[in-house]
Length: 589
Image 1 (cartoon, rainbow, N blue to C red):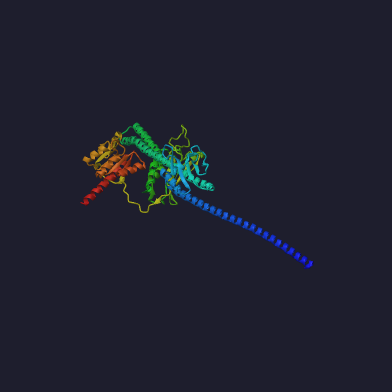
Image 2: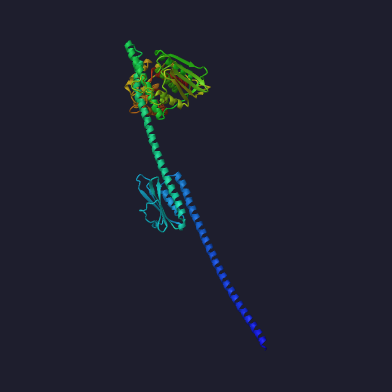
C-alpha cells in the first residue's frame, strides 16, 4: 500500500481517537454534572421533608397550646361566675385545683391560701401527684419558674397583703411559658378580686349590723326619754290646769300663770328635742289624713290672736276662700309649721305686726308668715336652718330658745316634698314662705267630732292602769270633774287580775310599767277574748310605739301631757261607740 494512503489512514485513526477521547471526556463531565444535580435534588428533598416535619410539629404544638389555653380560659370563666355568686371556701379552692389537673399538661397543682376564718393562718390544698410539687418556701418573687421549667409559682396579692400562692407542675414546651404565665396571672387576679369582694361584703354587713344596732339603740333611747320627760310634764301641766279651776288669790293666780307658761315652754322644748331625735333616727313620719284647712287655720288664729294682743302686736290673718274645703295631708305637722313660724315672729318682733297669708296656688297649699321684727343678718342666713343655731348663740342673747324650730320646719317641709324660702332685711323684718303639694279631697268622709257630741260620760265605769303615783292622782282628779270615780291599777298584771273578775266600760292603759307593761297586758286581754275599748295613755309619740299600741290591740291613743278635754273627747267618742254596739246587739237578738 502506498505511503500516502497509509499516512491518510493514520491521520484518520488519530482523528477518530481524539474524537473518542473528547466524547469520553464529555460523557464523564455529563455524568459528573448529573451526579452533582442528583445530589442537589436529594439535598433539596431532604430540606423540604425536614421543613414539612418541622411545620407539622409546630402546627401540632400550636394546636396543643391553643387547646391548653382554651381549657384554662374555660375554667377561669366558670370560676369567675362562681366567685361572683359565692364567697371563697375551702371546697371551691379544692374544686379549682381538681379542674386544673384535668388539663393534660398539668400534672399537679397546689394553692396555699390565707385561712378564711379569724385565725389568719395559711392552709395548703393539693390536686394530682403531690410528690411532684417541690418545696419553695424561700421563694419570695411574684412569679418563679423552677430550673427545669416544669414548676411555676405565682404569689396571690390583695393590695399590699399576701393572700397565698398558686403552684402548678406543667409538662409543656418552654415556648409556652409566656402564655402559661399570662393565664395563671388571670387566675390569681380572679382569686384576689373574689377575696376583696368577700372582705368588702363582710365589712358592709358588719357596718350594716352596727348601724342597725345603733339605730335600734337610738329608737329605744328616744322612746325611753320621751316617756321619762313627758310623764312628769303630764303631772305638772295637768296639776296646773286643775288648780286653775280652784279659787285663787291674785298672787296665787300669777304664780300659777307663771308655772303654766313655764310648763308650756318646757313642752315646746321637749317636743323640739324629741322631734330632732326622731329625725336623726329616721322615725319621724308624715301621716296623710283627710282634714279641713279652714278648721286648722281657725285654730291657729285663735291660739295667736290673744298672744299677739298681749305683746301689743297687730295680727293680720288672711285666708283665701279659693282654698279647697278638704285636703289630704298631715294637719298636725302643718300646724307645727305655722306655730313655729308665728311663734318665732312674735318672739323677734317688739313692735309692729305679724301677717299670715293662706292661699291655694298652682295646686299647692301655700302660706307665708311675715313680721316687722329685727330681721336676720345676711351672714347668718346660710346656717339658719342648722340645729341648735340662732342668730345670736351667745350666753347673753336677748331671745331664749333651743334653735331647733327652723331646722325642724325645714325637715318637715322636705318630708312633705314642699318648698320653703325666706326673705329678710335687718331691722325691717322677715318673711317665710312655704308651699306644700297637698291633694284635694272631692268626697270627704263624714266625721263626727267627739268633743261636739253629747253623751253622759258620768255613767261610764273606768279602769285606769298607771304606775306613776302623780299621774294616778292627776287622772283621778280630772275624772272627778266629770263625776267619774275610776278603779286604779298600778301595772298590767293587776289590770288582768281585776278584769278577770270585774266588768268596766273603758280601760285607760299606760304603756311603760313594771311587772307587765301595757302592751303585753293588752295583748293578753285580747287573746282571752276581752273586747271592751282600751285607750293608751302614752308619753311616747314615736311612730314605732304608736304602731306597737295598735298592733297589741289598743283602740286609741291619748298622748301625755294630756288635758281634761283630751280625756273628755276620748270618753265621749268611745261611750257613743259602746252605745251603738249595744243597740246593734239588741237588734240582732
